[in-house]
Length: 562
Image (spheres, one colour):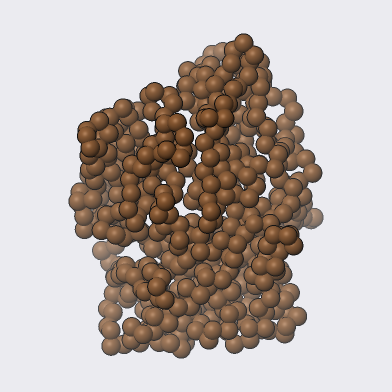
């Protein structure tokens, strides 16, 4: 710790060269972390990523602040079809920069150190249905990395994109050659496979019409992972152990019956040798007294909490799981207004066996509004057929499934069909807007917060993963057909509240500005609220204002007293 620091890069430049930290698009849509450097196990090497954003188109917006003049914020931001960053992965040894990998029109996705002299480096084609894991050895005589073809393992999807939201990373065994990895099996479900040699000869470790979610730890004796296999509920997460030295391998669920009625959604953190682990339960109740939640329990004693029902609908051969929040004094003989809360983006999941208190808890318990969340086509952890249904046609089935679910809820007998609303944020704002603009007649009103309005306006890595390229030779036609603006005329018979932060660096204010312009040009009346200098999350006092404003809008729509 007392050694002086050594500078290993000198070419960093604001908004142009990023060393060891990702630029905007890689942080948000590929790496999902704020770092891009990795030490080898014994500290012999450090590998880092250099992101070169030269000639990347920029997004610019005004930050108003308190000064006389606003300042301009500029961020390199490749939208669908635009030039992407050039990526280098240099390796540093004893302050000397050694050979590196370069990715121009491919995506670097992750780096895994196996030993000080062996790495696994992963990359994707720009059309993200083809992923490669290259296992490479350091050659000291040439100071370079050798990646033989027989250790370049290919993962390719014929029905959609590779991986889930991200391509999974490998978990190497102690032999430093073989590894475990999650990818789709022949039936189209994500499962753990053991690879020693070629991917074609991979051995399935798990199987079934459910999905392995995450590998926590691999030891010489066992694999610890999470899945949603228990009792067939895709929104559950339980922790399993497979003893790989027994013959046949023996599987044990660590958490399934630990507190079965209290918690069915877990994650865990394991010690280095997996001798110890800490369980985290996302249910309502404690497992052991690491955190007693007494303060929360006390606060909840005076709150009438909604009842929660998790179940499924069958619509034209498609299973739609839903989570419904019912008023505390729910009476099936009465008619209640319904609010559908939607996200609906590819690889997402809203119907989970988790506990939380939020705005929709208040709506159900205090305002007696039934709130429903529905996982439609494109959502995750139910197999590739469900997941890849939306491939290259975003904005079609996500909307159809929310409308179909609303009609099924009406058939249950306790929903007032003249008081149905929908709302969502980000991708959910997009689905909300398209549902209102569908002309279905199902929804009376809706609220879209920070919505995407055209996929040509969103980030290249995310958008192209699901839509391909916005070119005539690829998928331009659907890019044009899937905009909110194209449906402006259909908003005449609904009440629409459009909300956005002016400093949103993720889904740019441009999206809502274009919706507004299209509605004005069509002479459609609507309501709008912007939040000055707020980003995609609209936090702080603005958040309180936002939910208060949406509550007033919703109560007016449902003719509820203030």
